[in-house]
Image 1: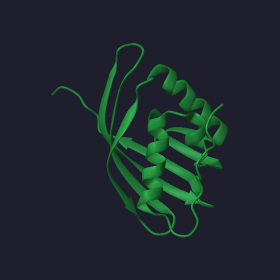
Image 2: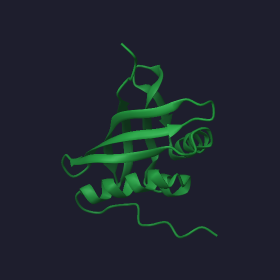
Image 3: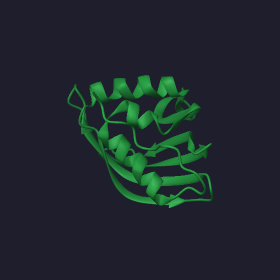
Image 4: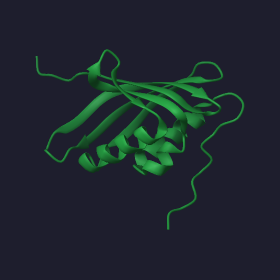
Length: 136
């Protein structure tokens, strides 16, 4: 039996601690814990994809499915938190370094950031960016 989910909705103004709690949820790779922080009508824009925004993952159920699939392919995916910024009552930024190794042997090691917008104390918009690493 899994542990009860921690409170995932904040009240009042957004805090750096709430952003850190979201990061801890992602590092747990527990999809239910992570998605407890998301609004039902959220949009998660991935860094890579066919759209100018990357790839749009629309709705909490779609986010849940995407994360479950991602963690099957990259089971050791982890984010080292570098910084958090709060921009008003409902916007925040996290800066991190993501690492992991996918099932096909591809190694992840990127610096990136997430731009968050919250609605009703939950993640409503999450826009992910990361550095492109290539040999020059």
